[in-house]
Length: 273
Image (tube, rainbow, N blue to C red):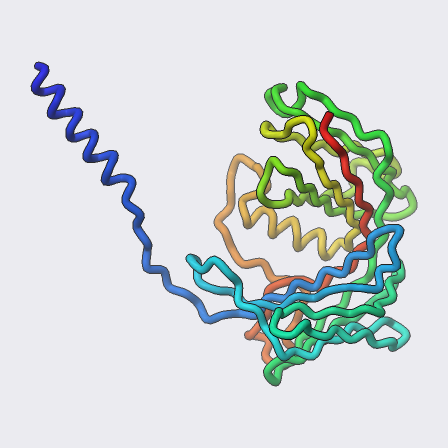
């Protein structure tokens, strides 16, 4: 019987070793497609004059970097015809404007000229409420009652339908957490929002960003979060590409990924006690 046990252990050992072998699957890679990160954020208490648009392309699954795109002409124009030009920091794919004029309720059009093609998008800059001072901490929070949880609040504007984007970063996670909300069930109320994580500890700083967004961007982000599998729902969907509001006016089929968004944003940091 002992001999059989030894043979079984050897077989199991070889099985475990073989499972550790890294296998690279030869995946089909589609032709690169333009990616436009055009998020214009007006942080409360700042002039908002310096803004950035980033161009890159899609790449292979195993690639650790996203190729940058140079040589584009990028402008953003407001409703009165004022043109704001974004100039590339040479070779970076980052296009900077230093004289942008943000205004709540103003509509802007972005135009990108690249390789003989014209990409456009239109969006309105949306207001954001203030994050209230009274952020609360519960050391027995989370779904299981064993996580540090913070609760922050904001006042919803009762006069209009509102849509919000939350961005939260902390040392407990490698990437920011994003979530979208509307005021369908909280019109005019003081609204609580919760964040918890099992790895939060005293001294950690949690960065909270609250953006006011349009309904169109809310719908886009809602689809994107579900498609990425980050909605924490019980029935995950199949990952898929989500189209934004940017249109290739020269060749509709050669569309770009990304979204042209303008948002006021309130920021607040909280140190875990």
